[in-house]
Length: 261
Image 1 (cartoon, rainbow, N blue to C red):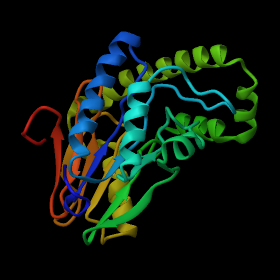
Image 2 (cartoon, rainbow, N blue to C red; image 1 turned 90 degrees about the horizontal axis):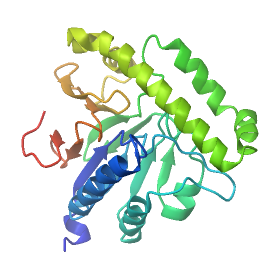
Image 3 (tube, rainbow, N blue to C red; image 1 turned 135 degrees about the horizontal axis):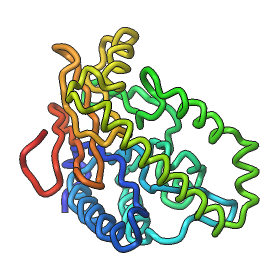
Image 4 (cartoon, rainbow, N blue to C red; image 1 turned 180 degrees about the vertical axis):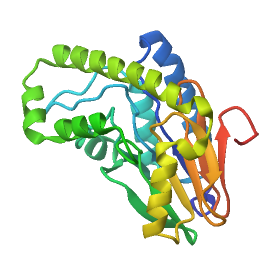
């Protein structure tokens, strides 16, 4: 077992969307991610989950969505062992409130943060609603964040609320895939909205070393300039990618493969 003093790696992963395409398919991916957690906990000093753990999540006062016991149990095991885990809320878990903090001791972030690790400065965010365009989603995000609307949704029976949430989540995701597939057909990373957003952030914070996002399901590690890199973490639906920072270098890897992207 690695001692606390030997834990130096910081891990980042995003966009798991557990719950899709169905229970059986989701469970296969959940077990794989739990296996990854068992691997990284050996030398992790911190684990950052950058959003969209579930395809739909809503916390009623006394009820949370059914399932995911292997994942939630593993997360609790890791934090109980003294390894911190943080979650940046994504657009699919925007209705995560206090369950993760109270039950699992996972720190929750609701907006982008600048953090420093081993003298390197990181800009961390899920990535939804950032960059130019996508005004429709930006409006919906305000609707979902409205406390009155959350209060109204809470009055739905959990069975009905979960079915509605999963239905609209799937519709939104399929629409985004179709739209973004057309946008990304040029394979020009400079056309990517998070690339443009990164350029704007660097004008405000030129001392950043890394900008790390999820949301877009693209595994990307690219230079923004001769000092700063943009990392988009990919997903755990088709890519099974993650990033690791060892105190000196950050690498984007695929679970089960040694080669980085």
